[in-house]
Structure formats: C-alpha cells, structure tokens
Length: 240
Image (cartoon, rainbow, N blue to C red):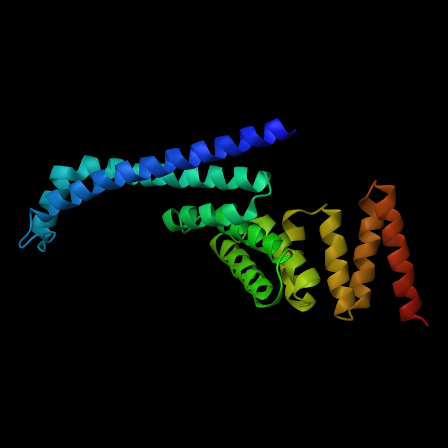
C-alpha cells in the first residue's frame, strides 16, 4: 500500500513538471510571436490599423491557431491532474491546479464544480474565518457552474448539501434540489436531503410527500426503513 502511494505521488510530480515545462516552452514561443507581430506596428506595439491587423493575421494566422489549440490542451492537462489529486484526497493541491485550469478555461462548468467540491471538503478541516472562507468559495463556485450549465446536475446536488448541512440555509437548497431531481428522478439520497430541507423550513407536508416517494421506489431496505421512521415522526407532529 505504501509503495503504491509513493508511485502515485511520483506520477503526480512527473505530470506537474511536464505540464510546467511545456508551459514555459510554449510561453517562450508565444513571446517570440508577440514580438514579431509587434514589429509589424509602430514603436514596438501591435498594429493599430485594421489593415495592419489583417496583415498580421494573414502572416501568422496558422501559428496563432496552433497556439490557441495548445492553450486548450494545457487546460485539459490541468483538469486531468486536478481529478487525479482529488482521487488521492489531495484537495489543497487540487485547488491550486484547478485555479490554473479555470484561468485557461473559465467557462468550463465542471472545473467550477470540482473547485467548489474541493473547497467544501477543505472547509471541514479548518476553523473560524478560514472555514467560512472555504464554504463561501464553494458556494460561489457551484453557483458559477450552474450559471454556465443550468442542466448540470452535480453542482445542484452539491450546493443543496452545502446549504442544508453546512450553512443552515435549507430554504436556499430547495430550488436546487428540486431541479436536481427533475434531472435525476430516482436519486433517493437527494430526496432525503430535500425532505430534510422541507422539514427544517416547517413544510412538513412536502417532506411527507417525499418520504412516501422514497418508500415507493427504493429497494434498499435500510433507506425504506429510515423513510418510514421519518414519515412516522412527521405524522405524529402533524396530528398531535
């Protein structure tokens, strides 16, 4: 087990060094290209006229396109590295690589979701203002992921968990969890969380309806039993 762990760390270091070296080499090439384009303008600045810019694009268009593809590829490498680090529970390191990935691909919803997830996990190991900062960071990241892709289910679930269990804002969780269950209609765990949110906000009938739904669809005897027990508690409160 220890040997396997060492091998994984070595691989992470190799990938990090490789990506870093690639960026350094590519940045040098980009710098040289920028100088050549600037030389086509006046005083070492890029061309200011439309005609000058068109000429630069004509001369260096293929190379610019190649560099654009390279940037996208580097973003993919950072993303892969981030996932590998998260798989090994190295969430602090994953946050740093995710920052790089987001810098290159700021409209990738998955990157923001992963950033929020790592932030939430790190928050649970910190205290005071640092803990609040990580949770706030997680909330913002999940909301950004949802903004970028309204049909992306995972950040809906993640922010629902965050609001219900960490931030004590169940009312904020409800619309996200409802939307999540529109996308993932048979996710019993999400139903439990939404039922808890309804219960916390005093909407006992909606919570009761969800427990009935869980009882009807789940084949997991322990979850069915939990739903039946929770339903019994709510019925006692409704008709006491």
